[in-house]
Length: 112
Length: 112
Image (cartoon, rainbow over all chains, first blue to last red; front, side):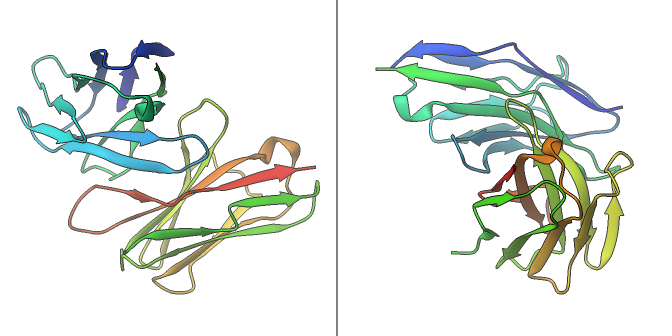
């Protein structure tokens, strides 16, 4: 079945540091890939998406590129802020059932 | 702004006392989902509606039921809440033109 693997957390960074959060996937067919962010006590917000190989999703300084050859969708940001502290979920959907398959999520803490 | 609304944000119920959580949307999306999210975990899909068609996940307990009286509203009924049902409950919607799901802010359920 479909699955998403995220790197183990939590991650703690200083403000303005470079961020990479790894995400790899296993899927039948051609999935669409997503990063969702969840701030404390809130629901999930779509951060960015990519629907086909080599697509780059970007939003709020975050980027991720759909790499079919390595089945990866790593999240990057060049300079994190304290306000980026949240839980980040990598997820995929395939056309087979249109259900989101989530990774376990990773907590990012950014200190001033 | 078009959005997904969940009421109440916080709900306290007693062990075994039925409780209903509500979700409404102004996006006019065909698909509505209910997820359960426990602390430090990814959301777990309970069921979803595609228009009026109800789709239950195989491992969703019978204690959880849902109603969708119209396009805009969807309810989650927990018939006899147990202590293990304490969690954040997330509603999400999706249109038929993409796989993006839009989440509400969630209802935090406490069972005493």
